Length: 316
Image (cartoon, rainbow, N blue to C red; front, side, top):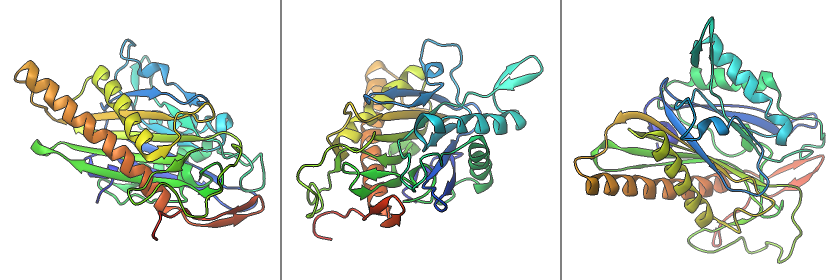
């Protein structure tokens, strides 16, 4: 399906509101139990939650859910709702009497884009998005464009609509690498046929804060350090897709998840290196494609806060 859900067990849930002053939402990536994960944050204005737990030197190596949300730092509370859902399902790090779900989150800046600056995701929206992800089933089609955390996303210095995009790449040996992106970037997308839409303003001051959020998923067996390196590779794809990227006003964040269903060739040190380089190169390309898919899937909208036309490559 050319989607992150081509990776067995990865499920996506979106919840959004786009009326009564709202233009925001939450996206939850729900991996199989036992999935290993890490993260690489490179933007100058990040809004994140629980990302320190994904460092390779920390106690827990697995991730129970990843929350991508609108609402800037306020929206990070939606992770608590997803965490509550995971606890009810018994997903998390076992402690006496319960489990502690590991639910990292990252937010984009979309405050006021629907007209009401106080309309931002809450715990209940995070809970609903986690439940929706679980209910979607394996290999479900992923909604793209103005959904979930991409509902209020914009690109190109706030001039065009951004959104959610996804992609996947299959490698030899049954390894699949998929990506999901929420594109809310200061920069413009770089399409193969041209850099920008023909009517893009030449000089526009940055409007608010910006962020591109990405989740990479693979069915390969990776440890936490290898997940961290895979997340780092994803930033190369982000830089290829958006110009500029990783600016002071962007909170660019890439998560990487490994479900561990397919073993890589580690028969020798050279084979291990080739396997990882191949996978991580594919991760960068999957991120690039997911970002461009998010741009192309976004639709024009008009709200009380203004109009956001769709952004199309040169020649369309």
